[in-house]
Image (cartoon, rainbow, N blue to C red; front, side, top):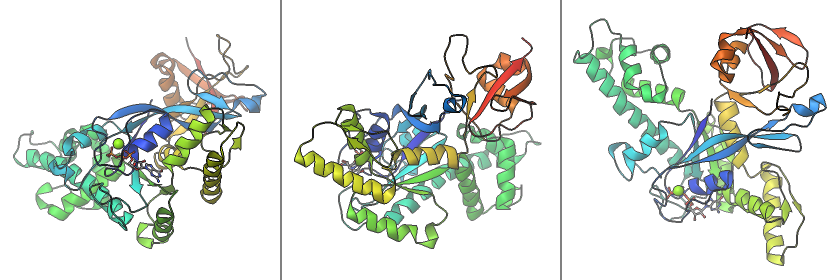
Length: 397
Ligand SMILES: Nc1nc2c(ncn2[C@@H]2O[C@H](COP(=O)(O)OP(=O)(O)OP(=O)(O)O)[C@@H](O)[C@H]2O)c(=O)[nH]1
Ligand SMILES: [Mg+2]
């Protein structure tokens, strides 16, 4: 299973800058709206503490890499066009943009916390980032609502067979959001509007659309441009505003991450992405040294640049993805002599049998039992896999 994290937000908030910092790509960045038109997909990484050292081994990753005991596991990151108010009605690059989001599992909403861009991404001063947070949620809800209404209309005009339930119709209409009848049923129950759509008023439909949206497109907020004093002031204010308590907000500087990675690549600093510090190892000019000192002050204050943190919060905390290492109970190597080559990211609440199927359908079909490589304990197929488990699957074939 490969996860896709989508970067969303109004124009000029730094989505492409975040994308480039995370993936070390070079898509255009610019201080004007709609710099990005076509979506880009790149490879970013999430950090997982490597299990090999616990076995006295050094791993040989088949994908990604390992640096000082931290595995960098690849995941897909998608950079899309900016979204402006009315996008669901086609404003800006509207519908095109929204369709690009269909394929994503979780969103990182990049917000310009400096307040120096207006609702349309044009330069301004003193714009309240809260307005952006609200608008994006509303816009996504309206997009979902439009699709939900089509499902309700189809149901009411009787294009479906009589005994079709509303959840079946909606699950079909909203299948692009990777939902299903059971989930829709559960969400209708949760908003408590009953199962007869004829009794739903506009507010009921919107409440349901919102519920389906938050369930199928969970979201983290990356408070970007935190290297500016304006953003830091807004961050302090918004994180202490009780109305925004329910959100997960990660302070972030795409610029700082990009600067450190570039300096690392150039041999100027030693920096492991996501770390709270770096070391200057090459010759630096006085200007460079001053810039690096500023970045270190930022890291001291906020713990990291926030780019790694935003991606990992999205995948591990919000989506609940579980990293698992396929291992061997009698040594971690495979038949090619690779040590712990893979780290799989699997859905929350997966069982040992689900894990076997994620390796290969034959392994799932032939599942006998699994072994916890740390304790050598035998695990049944219903065992729920845990964070950083090292598991060998024993099959009939
Ligand atoms: N200070 C500061 N500026 C940033 C940061 N990230 C991006 N910017 C600036 O914000 C502007 C917009 O950046 P982009 O990455 O092009 O923004 P975008 O969200 O992709 O914009 P669109 O593609 O038009 O939707 C550029 O001038 C960037 O240099 C950051 O971390 N700090
Ligand atoms: Mg862009």
